[in-house]
Image (tube, rainbow, N blue to C red; front, top):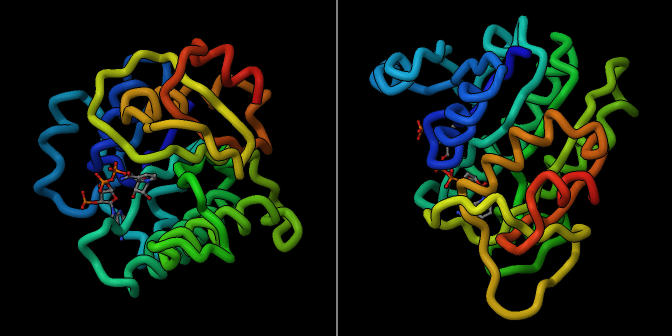
Length: 218
Ligand SMILES: NC(=O)c1ccc[n+]([C@@H]2O[C@H](COP(=O)([O-])OP(=O)(O)OC[C@H]3O[C@@H](n4cnc5c(N)ncnc54)[C@H](OP(=O)(O)O)[C@@H]3O)[C@@H](O)[C@H]2O)c1
């Protein structure tokens, strides 16, 4: 299975690429600049240049699946939140549908909501609007994506445990909670193997349930 990783050079994206490579998958890393290539060359992973603000059909063509791990980040303006996290994400979904990459796994966010009134509502709204399109894409296009939406909490560099807790979108866990990028990357990749995660969306935090069991329960 050839899997395009969008945002491959990011902290989560690099983990996604490594996990795909370690499994029987064929990752294709979408990066923004040629200087990002050597890290992927070392892994033996092919790269393609692409920017979500422009057409990425060339990157998606020939892929079976897409994992979206990109994000405009907190250091750019709200314009980039719209152009990358909202419209760029939708651009990638349209390209996936048109070019037959029927499986699409979205790294979304805890509290993503088109009507968010949070402190970072521009971001939560952009992610929520992109997720909305993914859920309803089949209503406006002939092709239907088999989607999964994974909503992590605050991301950490904690080593992965592959033990997590999952809940319905809207779930507000009690106490302190966070999501290790290792666990998140594992969930994004392993969702490809779990038919149960198709057309499902879930909150993912670090917890006590083995990842595979958690994915089967969503
Ligand atoms: N941080 C949190 O606590 C948190 C919580 C919940 C959800 N999330 C979501 O998780 C995502 C991934 O987190 P992370 O820490 O792995 O992020 P990251 O390290 O900032 O990686 C984001 C990646 O997106 C790429 N990117 C940015 N603009 C792009 C564009 N126009 N076209 C293509 N790629 C583009 C970046 O490319 P370059 O490498 O070229 O800059 C980078 O590789 C975040 O963006 C956010 O949406 C984050």
